[in-house]
Amino acid sequence: MLERHKTILEILQSQGSVSVTDLAGRLNVSEVTIRKDLTLLESESLLYRTHGKAIPISPYTGNRHVNEKEHQAVQEKRAIGRQAASMVASKDTILIASGTTILYAAKEMVECEELTVITASVPVSQVLSQSRSIDVIQLGGQVRESALSVVGPFAENMLGYFNASKLFIGADGVDLDFGITTTNMMEANLNRMMMDCAQKTILLVDSSKFGKRGFSKICGIDKIDQIITDEKIPQKYLEALQELGIEVTVVKA
Image (cartoon, rainbow, N blue to C red; front, side):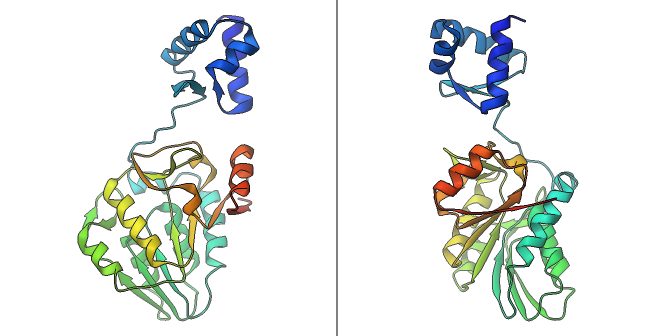
């Protein structure tokens, strides 16, 4: 590997992303040379090229089954879930979307008193319906096998009858340019409609989701009121989110 290639990779690891123009200036070579370098490094799966710049890995995330995702970043998700549950008040009415981090939050809400929950997630309904002090409204519709959550017009129509103080929502990706994303178009649409029914939208994501993109956009980052994540969140994301006026709660796993 050329010394220039090693330098490019070192810059990527320290910055998270870098433009072709910036690399050309720092390495004192032409942009054509840098583009060739990036093409070679991408072919070796050492970086990913996008829109005139390079990033360490591909930002795109595919659809995975909930059973697989539930066993990833477990400590982080539990800590995020505990923090989310602490925000729920007695006699509250909340909306809960789908996702494994969301499920960990639901498990922490079992002891809540006089709580009303409207949810798209079948596992969340199963967990919370075991409590006599929690009323659970399961949205209806087509059940996604990979996520065990409902999507489609029946669920969307039901939302028109409800209003909630908070929406707890998950995501497959959080990107500063593209926004909040998931891997399913119908789920993204349902999530947007949930946001219209809630006074506050709270995003629950572990730090691995930052810099990633799913297939379908839920909303721009500026539409989120609060984000709960773990302490491994990239510093550039933390600073950018705070500059946007978004409340970021960082928990220790």
